Amino acid sequence: MAENPAYPVGLRLTGRKVVVLGGGQVAQRRLPALIAAGADILLVSPEATPSVEAMADAGEITWHRRPYAEGDLADAWYALIATGDTEANTRASAEAERHRVWCVRSDDADAATAWTPATGHSEGVTVAVLTTEARGRDPRHTAAIRDAVVEGLRDGTLVAPHHRTRTPGVALVGGGPGDPDLITVRGRRLLAEADVVIADRLGPRDLLAELPPHVEVIDAAKIPYGRFMAQEAINNALIEHAKQGKSVVRLKGGDPYVFGRGMEELNALAEAGIPCTVVPGISSSISVPGAAGIPVTHRGVAHEFTVVSGHVAPDDERSLVDWASLAKLTGTLVILMGVDKIGKIAETLVAHGKPADTPVALVQEGTTAAQRRVDATLATVGETVRTQEVKPPAVIVIGEVVGVGPRTSA
Ligand SMILES: C[S@@+](CC[C@H](N)C(=O)[O-])C[C@H]1O[C@@H](n2cnc3c(N)ncnc32)[C@H](O)[C@@H]1O
Image: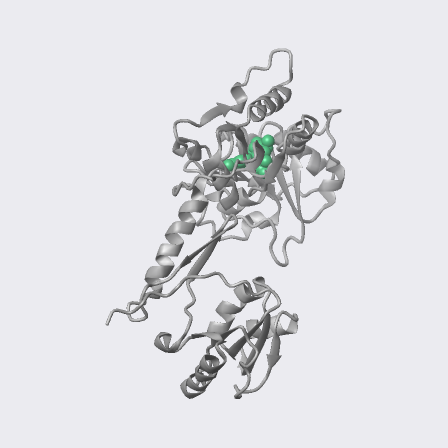
C-alpha cells in the first residue's frame, strides 16, 4: 500500500516545552535550531557531548542527568528521541503516542510521528526539504536539494523575485580583495538584486560579468566630475539613481570602512534622506597577506598589527601618521596604498630605530590570478620596488611575520 506523504508544517515553539532524550551527536545537531526557535528545552540524558553540556551551562537548555523515565513526555509539545538505547526509544515513543506528542526518532523513522526536514535559511526564508516516504528516505539527497536551493538563493543563481516592494536605496557592499568567492553571502545577494551597480576598480570585478543585461553597471572611476570632486560626483550618482526608485549597489574593494570612504558616502546619502545599508567586506589588509602565506599575527612573534595608509609620504604635511611611534612597535605593520612612497617610508622607519634588516613583503594583486609576492628588507625595499617593478594595488607587510610561513602558498 502506498504510504501517505508527511504533512509539512512549521512549529512555533516559543516558550513551549520540548523534550530531548539523549545528549549525543543527534541532540548536538538539532538543539541549536530548537534553541533558536525559543523552545523551553528539557534534555534527559545521563551523558552529553561537550557542546551539549555547554548549552546547559549557558542556561539555553535544562539538563536532567538521568536516563529516560515514564512520564517525561507528559506535558511536552514535541519530542526528539535520540538515546543510544533502542528499547528506551521504543518506550518513549509509545509514551509520546499516548500523550499525542509529535516525536522524532533518530533510530527508526518508521516509528516516528514526525520527521526533521533538511533545513537552511536565506534572508527571512526557511527552506525545508522532506522525503515523501519513510522507506525512500535519503538524507544526503534531501540535504543536497536544500543546499542547491539555499546556495542558489544566496548567490543569485536561483532568482526568486520579491513581490513586496523592495526598499529602494543604496547598499555599500564590501566586495573583498578581488577573488569573486571572497565577497560575503549578503553582498552577493544584494548584487544579484541590484538595478544599478557602481563599482570600484578594486574588488571582485569578475562578478560584474555575471549580472543580467538589464543591470546598469557604472565604473566609479569614469563618472564625470567637472565642477565637483570625484567623490562628490560618486555620491551624487548614488543619490540620483536611488531617487529614481532603483536598488543601487555601491561595490567597493575590501571593506567599505577601511580606507574606503564608506562613511563619506553614507553621510551624503543620509543627508539626502536615502536609506543605506552597509555590508562589511574582507579587507585586503588581512586577506592579501594571508593569500601570500603571511599571517598578520603569529604566536610568539607579533601580538599586534597596525594598518596604515601610505598614500602620502612621511614628510608630507597632510600625513596623519606618527611614523616615529610606528617604528617603535614590535608587531606587524601593514601598509596600503604605499607602493609609490615605500622607499621614503622605509627610510623614516629606520631613522626612528626600526632595524634595517626587518623583513618586508609586497603582495601585488592579492587573491587574483595575477597575485605576486616580492620580498625585501627595510634597507632594500625602495630599490626592490623599482627593479622588480612592483605596481599598485599592493599590500606591504613589514615585520617578522613575513618569514614564519613555508612560502609555498605565495
Ligand atoms: C583605497 S584602498 C581600499 C582598501 C579596501 N577598502 C580594503 O579594505 O581592502 C586601496 C588599497 O588597498 C590595497 N588592496 C586592495 N585590494 C588589493 C589586492 N587585491 N591586492 C593588493 N592590494 C590590494 C592596496 O594597497 C590598494 O592600494
